[in-house]
Amino acid sequence: MTRQPRPPARFPLDLDQVHAPPAKRAMPAPSAPATVTTPAARLATVPAAVQRGTALLRPQRPLQQAARDAAAQHAPSGLGLDSAAVRARMVERLRASGVRCEPVLQAFGAVPRHQFVDSALAIQAYEDTSLPIGLQQTISKPSVVAWMLALLFEGSHARAQGDLGRVLEIGTGCGYQTALLARLGRAVVSIERLKPLHDKARANLAAHRQGDVRLVFGDGRLGHPPRAPYQSIVSAAGGDDLPAAWVDQLAVGGRLIAPCNHPERGGQALLVLDRTDQGLTRSWHDAVNFVPLKSGVQ
Image (cartoon, rainbow, N blue to C red):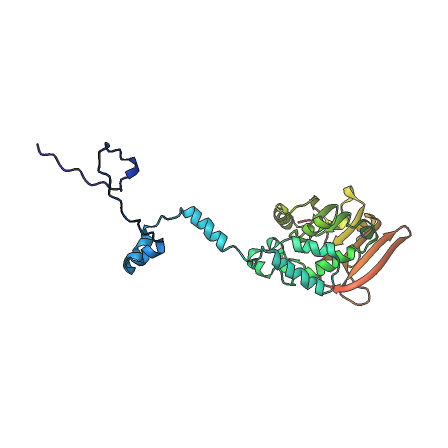
């Protein structure tokens, strides 16, 4: 029976693993030392077409390693919305507009505003503009929020202690200002009367909550007596005057700031109320335009 020839090996043999029986061989005659050439010199003697083909024979990196190397070589350069540089530019604009309160500026530099607005509006998140957040509500302009928080820091307690103490926020909205207040106060109670916004703020703040923050679904005009008194009270909605509950829940040395209808100018302006040992003092500041303050929940 004729034996069929064995097919050729599909892969090169590893010569280091071939154990041929030892054989006696004559010692080679001494010869002149071989000329040592560099890889580049050897490659230069190879035709160009072959040189190009050798690239196909080089070992390839694993795909995952190649992807990691590419990511390392093309890392984001800080132009995205999640970049601290984008927030830093917003902070510098706030500083140029007259905001000088460093704790407030630092908070604005730390909290990513684009994560609190709808994705379709994220590109506008760091512009000085208000944006809709649904249910006919808005997130206020950064300059207005910064100015209000800076005014809170001029209160008696904040000047003495270096923070806003226990804070009551009326109108949680999307939760952006709440995230700022969490960095500026020791504890924050934030009330929202619209359930969809309350739920949205809770979801937004899940990744940004810092310190003692409590979100309450309820009527903001009533404040939140269980955790009163408050060293700082701030409202994101305005009416004809301040609800009595807010005034009652303001601590001695505390400051309240809210948009109210100005009795002489017409339209809204920021009203600042301070409680001292001698009583209450009021002062009016810049004109603003906030959503109206309403009672009840929905």
